[in-house]
Image 1 (cartoon, rainbow, N blue to C red):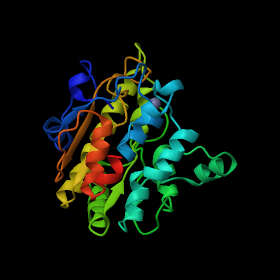
Image 2 (image 1 turned 30 degrees about the horizontal axis):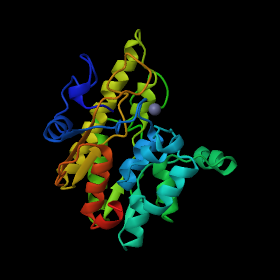
Image 3 (image 1 turned 90 degrees about the vertical axis):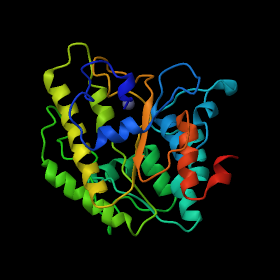
Length: 279
Ligand SMILES: [Zn+2]
């Protein structure tokens, strides 16, 4: 999800988002290209966030660098096993959990062919279960149906309540993570003559995120929000973009990073994990 400053006019950012937008505007806009040609991808982008290391430079022939994804291959998997934030938090005796709800079909598919995204891969690598039983379980569609026209199945007040539950659960944990991928799926539906329901669904997803975040912050939670790459901010095209991404939060010190690698290191620093990320 690209930053509003890099979004075309008419984007999903252009609506009233009373909690989300002030936080985004007070935050930073980060480079995701890392000086490597091509469009940023989820495998490398998320690995940068999770490790604070330049995962893009690890890829490609002869150190040329390459944006790679969506799923991490052997090189990125090795990096994540060694250095992903959940792994390091666990080693440091701190607690982390991924709140995404994964349906039974997800586990059935991965039993046949493991092909985890970077976030579930990293939590599993840390020895942490998906669908943790003692925490709120959040659908990453945030109360929208999975397919077109992505109708709402939950109200804004229900999403706010979920946010409150997450904030309460966070009082007893060091880090709770939500991997929100519906924005990328919607972004890949983009085209010059995209149907109006796509834009409507995109705006609705942002409203649901706004309500959820409002619940988190209203209940005293601290939160940080970002993205691995641009895409969803430009629904005129189906591809990822080189737009800068937000790095924003409430109750956290964002520091002065310029790209997603530096910001990954900032986040690790919040937990006193500075040395490993600078190695
Ligand atoms: Zn994508």
